[in-house]
Amino acid sequence: MPVTVGPYGQSQPSCFDRVKMGFVMGFAVGMAAGALFGTFSCLRIGMRGRELMGGVGKTMMQSGGTFGTFMAIGMGIRC
Image (tube, rainbow, N blue to C red; front, side):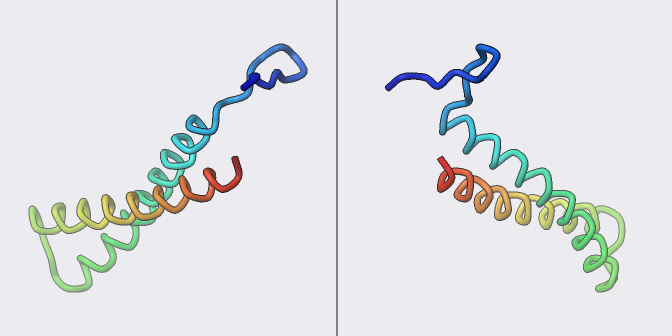
């Protein structure tokens, strides 16, 4: 399969590279959203200290993984 070449001689990223990039971007956005929502929800139910950090970290990882997966699927559809 030939590699497409852009107007200045650079090659376009492969489909797998686009899917990886979509996952990483989605993971970053999901972690930021998870930090906001996780902090708010954990403080609302009264968590403090180590429990708060664990709850916020868990929420960040869950939302980052979920949003990253959906962004990777979306980028895979666009290939």
